[in-house]
Image (cartoon, rainbow, N blue to C red):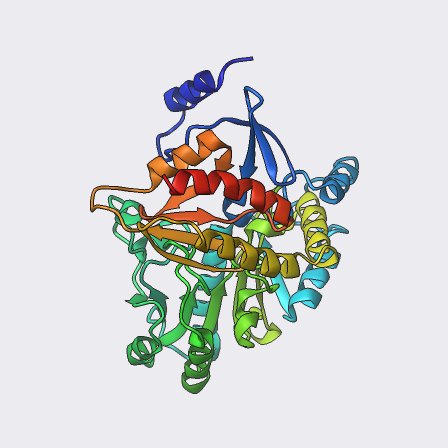
Length: 401
C-alpha cells in the first residue's frame, strides 16, 4: 500500500487546493478511534465537525445501512418512498416541530431556510417584492454558497466571489440591542448560531437566545437557528436552544443527522410557515432518499437510546475541568458547552495554533485549529472518561511544553 506521504501527494497533485488538511491520512475508524495508513492509532477529537456524534461506524447505524442497501437507494421526489414519511415523523416527534423538509448538506438546508423565510415574508407578511431583509451575525459560518459567502465576515470565504445577493444585514453577535436596532419594516428573520463553532467556539452570554426570542415576538420577526453543529446532543441537550428554554420558528439540522455515513440535513418549522412552499418551489434529487432516511432514522435512535445528550453534558464538564488544569500561561480562555470546546491561546500576531495541532497529531490526538488562535475539541459523544484521560495525557504533554 502507498505511504501516507504518497496519498497526500496524490491529493495535492490532482485535487483543488481549497483545503489545507492536517498531515494525517486516515485509513479506518471505529468509535472514537481512527488509524492511519501505517497503522498508527489516534483519538478523534473533531468528529468531522460534529458529523460523527454517534462515533465512527456505529454498529446499529451500519446494520441499518446494510439492510437498506439490499432494498432501495434512490427514487427522487418524483415518487413516494416508504422510508421518508416515517423518518419525517420521527424527526418532528423528537423536535416538537410540525413539518420538516429534507435536504443533503447543511449549506443546502441553510439556503432552504433563507428561501422559506423570504417566501413567508412575501406571502404572509406582505413585505414588498424583493425587499425582504434577513439579519445575520458577524463571524457567522453557515456554509459557502454565493449567497452565504456574501454575508460572511471571513475574507477567505467571500474574497473573489462577488457580486453577492442583497437583502442581508450584518450585526455583532451576542448583541440583542444591535439586533433590535437593525429591524425595519422589511425585516423578516434573523439567522443565528446558538454557539459560533467556526468562529472559535464563541459562546454567547446567558439569556442571549431568550432575548432574541422576545425581540422576534415583539416585532413579528422569525428566529432561525442554525444547529447544524450544535444540534443533536452536541452541547448536552438535544438542541442547544433548550438550554434557554425557547424554541425557534425555523430550525436547521445537518451533520450528525447523517450518522457519519451520508450527508443528511433538514429544515423544521410550523405548518403555517412551511405551507408557503408549493410544488415546484424547492427540491432536491437526493434529498429524502431512502438510504439517507434509513441512516438518519438510525442516527436519531442512537442519540436517544444511548443518552448521548447526557453523556455530552457530563463528559464535557469533565473534559473542560481537565483542560483547565493545564499549566500554560499562553492559554487565554477555555470556552465550551457540552462537548463543543475551544482553547484560545495568547499568541503573536503572525502565530497560529496549527503547529500545536500538528504536534497533537504526532502524539495521537486529532484536533483542529479554528480562527488561527483557537484549538477546537469536539469528540464523538460516545466518549468515556477513560478516553478523555488517554487524550489528556497527550494534550497536556503538548500544551505544557
